[in-house]
Length: 359
Image 1: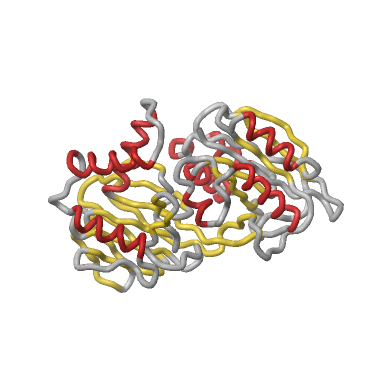
Image 2: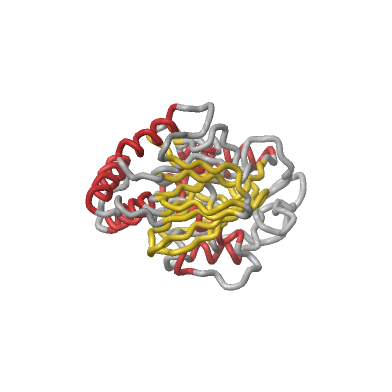
């Protein structure tokens, strides 16, 4: 987060919060802090990878040591001290989102403005009104994801984009498109499908080149338009799978076109496989294959079990909700500074919150 955005957050939230600035020291520190925080609300300013890291920290509370090797390199700080009970029944804090990344898939799907000033104002209004919504999460092995995970070509593209960004390339739609084409022609195996999907009580389906698993949510966005594997995303209807049984440009364009423009049904075609509303499924690969979750490359794998976790996370939003009273918050930003905010309210003791940005 730039100093300008930090100042804006401080000014906008003044009267609700007191600020204390810290500095994270290493990749994965945000996830570690989220797992250890006593705050009731965490405000994340950053991209989807940063949010994913915080979600995994929050969901990992009480589950033992945090796996820092899998964390995405985001910054985070937690607000301390008691207050109104904003946490869910399991004691996990709520999360609020201020977009600060490239795709910002989760923020867009939740209706959060991409403009930082507008998003901060919305967070303030939601805190003051005590509004939140509850969403389910996907769990891929031991990694939670908010909107999508994938094995195969799309994960290979994520890996290559991460490599290019590390070399100084700026993240953009153009960079993703160029990387997709280059990986299609020079990298991915388009001849021998490696993937098989297994579901309880159903015969396995083999011969899959690429799989996308979504949390009844957009897969990604092309400019301002969501790519929807299933219409009417709600983050609460189980996991949906879309798989390619043939990896050809015509198959890809057909699937993408339907996700962009068809809003009455899932994509369909002779080389497309859709599985809707699953509670669990397992993907196996005949060889090590690229794996990503929420746009974060997680390495290669040969088997992943996916599970839907209903009503797992509470998101602060301008919807009818239950939380009332004061809060505390945390901010992270591009220079890796973390701001700890303590909310004051006349309606009761404070609730905590946190805010962060990835790079």
